[in-house]
Amino acid sequence: MDVVKLELNNSKDIQRVREYVLKKYGKLDVLINNADYCLIGPVEATSMKQIKKQFNTNFFGLVEMTKAFLTPMREERKGTIINISSITSTVGTALISIYGASKWAVSGFSEALHMEMMPYNVQVKTILPGFFATDMFKKMDEASESDKYKYYAHIIKSYKKIMKNVRGGSPDELAKLVYHAATDKDKNKTIYYAGKDAIGVPIEKRILGDEGYEQLITKLLFEKKAKTIKFLTQVTEPRNKKIKFIFRKL
Image 1 (cartoon, helix red, strand yellow):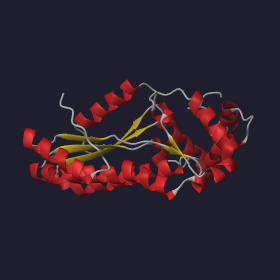
Image 2 (cartoon, rainbow, N blue to C red):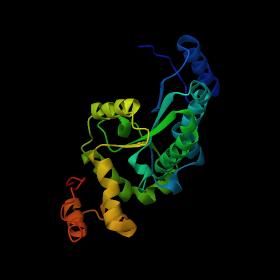
Image 3 (cartoon, rainbow, N blue to C red):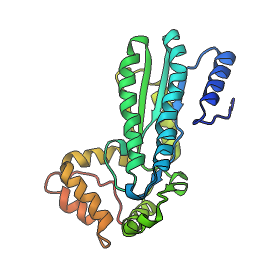
């Protein structure tokens, strides 16, 4: 294993790593863009400095890292780029709107780039993970404008309670899926959902509709005594009794 330190928000560092890889190995077979962090909090209480920092790491750093290796991959007419997005790039979620927006950007960028690179046999694939048992949610950045933050305290409390009780998947499962994507010979498959919730959430939104799904999320966040399973059952059973609920009782 060859480990090289990289500061994703430093253009010179990215070029240094690019030169190191190409000089030592001559090419790069697979690029996995995995670096990110989660910014939590209401938009009103989030500073522009925090918003720009979130996008610099989650999106612009990923784009610059990708651009660094596009030319050698195109010239080699071979290579795979795997971008780790999030299930939040398919559904809007209160309090992580900036994080979600950065992941929407990653997914949209990846889909378009795949089309551009297809003629050169370079694959661009997107992983959409749900919740996994990592330290990500223990290291979240929170909105910093405290004079406005206080107005959303009850919602934030509900959100943190939900996150605390979510049973995340095993990181090993995610690693296996990333490996599968990197070695998958199916050139038409570009999106991989990771985790039961990642598979279930888009299905629920399609069944409930945009309004129904928003009602579900707002009920979870705004009604202090809401029972998740009870509400999900009431909303979804009339349309589809076979749905497997992805949320657990709080």
